[in-house]
Amino acid sequence: MSVLTPGSVRSTAAHVVGGAKAKVADKAGLNRPRSADALVEMIVDTAERKARSCPGGIKDMPDAIHASLSAAQFEYVGKYLAVVRDQAEAGIRRRAAHNGWPTPSTKVTITLDDAQAAPVRVTERFSSPFDPVNGGTMEFTDRQEPAEIVIDGSEPDGPAVQPVLSDWFLTMADGTYRHLELDRWYNIGAAPSNDIVVDDGYVSGCHVGLCATGTVLLIEDGLPQENKPSTNGTTINGIPIQRFTLNANRGAEMKLGPHTVISIGHVHETDRQDA
Image (cartoon, rainbow, N blue to C red; front, side):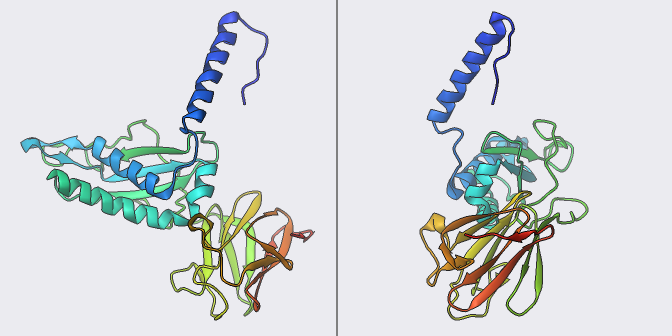
């Protein structure tokens, strides 16, 4: 947040005008998080708009599209990033086919940027220098490489990026241990597509979601954005929750339905947090 300090009339006026523009943008919804569908459409539209002209009147889609998300945007759609990525890549192929362009092999990556103000920032990249067949350039449009922490599990071109581990970990009912990666959503449930699969008939397909940030652990029962709570509920230390934030240095007992208990721990844990 900007703070007015003693200075010239010009600098004060610039601050007032800037603040007015920010308020207008916020009223217009420009700084509000996008839905997963809107994020897919934004990525596809960027790929089409930035396509390079080639001989014969056709265009070449970018080889890579990178979407950087603000913290608010990531919290809104974080658990659906794998779906967003896949749908965006498929949408880019469909858009190219509709336009009569060559079938692209565009790779989409999505990352979190805690310092970013805008909900979404999309950049494109071509993997080869410009030529009359493929087109393209090695540079991002804003000449700024994206962060190398890949939230959705995909890998950027080049050497594999090692995941960054958070201070949070889970101890499952069978005694197995799972250290959570930083800023990644984990879905836990009975369906085999989950990040952590629980073999319990009282646990829903996607029962609960977790995301470990640098300071807190976010917990959501079911799929709240689809208005689908878990069938038998989630409790933290015996208290039913829909959404819950577990503070750093605290642990808790999470129960899925009537039977499955998962212990949440923090490497610097000092006590257990009540819900």
